[in-house]
Length: 247
Image: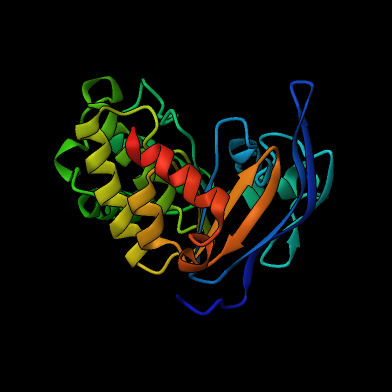
């Protein structure tokens, strides 16, 4: 297990009511510099709500969120935009602009948000597309890509922003087995790069191999937060992992 560096993300006593449901109940966690924190649990455990609440795509009810010491949960609109630009959030559904080519999906935020010159933005975008194995698809539109290719393009866009932390919400959940395999391979490459990551996933093998710490959530609460080897000794975690490995 990697020793945890300085805190990049801190979540303290977070509560979130979402769609009339108390989805996150008093969650506290820290992601250190270069640490990979993997969140697992059954459907309805509050995992996706948690990861959406960190950049305030879902508004927290109470609690504190800090990114490199700056308060996300109390930020005004202008400050929140700046802080969101330092969090590479990748949802389940890619969120690429359908009317833009893949390369333009990545270049646009680099130029508009990070004020990078166009040439430098294109070079950076291509570097990340190549790293994820889809450099040859840069001129295609999202509708011309498979699900796995779209998800890798979304990952490239997030990485190109050089975020302080990557927030990944079930990045393989909507994919067929072949596409899922290509995205998991891409996630392994990202994980080995030493970037801070908070990953919500059902990919048990991936989670156990890349996690510095494993978080198991149920009914909106953290039940276990420990290194994978220690977490696997918890009976509820063993039961859950057995159930998904059987499917």
